[in-house]
Length: 401
Length: 167
Figure (spheres, rainbow over the protein chains, first blue to last red):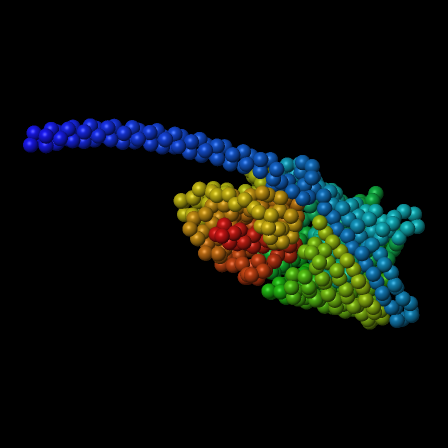
């Protein structure tokens, strides 16, 4: 019995000691674990900080490497912009009246645009063109400065420009990059009547009266038909080359584009004397009126334009050129981004003032194939009738950038 | 006298640095009705850049694009050159549809009709087709072809980017 009591006491003592020892061990273990957790938390925080720092460094590196659109293509040196367009044509036409052929390949236009953004409201823009590949004495081509002006935005609604600029008339005069129109050659109505491309020197203002409603007004150098005496507007372009400025011209335009797909515009021009006060001829005041409409519905587009000149003076009347007019209508359909078809009916008469049958009509049908949105291959068939009898086809490739 | 005053007023109206039509922050506030989420960054992989280049028809120089996501919505502020200068556009995509397209800064000297709602409202509800085109036809503006083209491309790009951020 005594032994049993001693053994129980010893066992209890041992167990109590073991419990105390175990408690101490758990406590030490917990402390160790807490320490590890704290260390890991600190490590995590450090990693997070480093991750943030790395992210910031990455963003900064990306900022330094990336080229924002504002400094991307077309803007190579502090606001200097470069662009251009060009077109190669092949004409294969037969003049059935004279039994002659025109089989010709011609790099018709090679153009470079240079511009400079002085600040967000004042800029310079220019268009420099080489026509028909070669220029110089006896060569077919010309080097021309078609645009060179300073433009200033007075506010969001009103801007003006001074220099050499394109006259705000018709559809093709201001926008004539090859991918923007159908047909290998530009339409004959705007070429022979308006006459596109037509640029003059002077000042012009643009006022946006309401969303999609704008007015243009310009005072500029005018035509001078005295040298050739033909009274054809195209022959009167002085191209701002030591141009006679005895009689300036005034042009105004109103344009409405407030409905997507629709453009309506009309222009008027008046010049006191298109002979530039030539002493040997009658004073010939002239008025040009043009109007055009463009309507786009889904992939179908319809363009129509009318232009007419009214010229005073005995000489113009004697030639039957006191009235000159023309119109065209052009439906087209864009099947895909790459492929479009069009047809255009043109009618024009540079001698509409006489009683002879001098009117020319031209029907053109063709296709445009866009290799890229800025690169186009074109093919068309044309037939001129009435005062002329010409038919044949044209091929072309054009680009813009 | 009145003519002189009118002319004087015309020339002394405040000249704006650019045509800032709405700030980015205001567009975000308007899109998210006040609660603008934190922006995220989409780093572009090689394949993604190639797809963007297909949409824009030229290489895309940026490495990443910042956007603001919130549930099925995302807002993107993107830039594309029309003819010479970048047009900054805010685009709000919701449930894979364009909810709003707004020109924030217009810097081109021509073609600014694209900044008006009569043009940008055409994009509302447009989705992306399988070949990454818009599901709706967008009527153009004669004489503003390049600006119209820029906005159309950015709309396609925003819808495509939205699909990428959800992957």
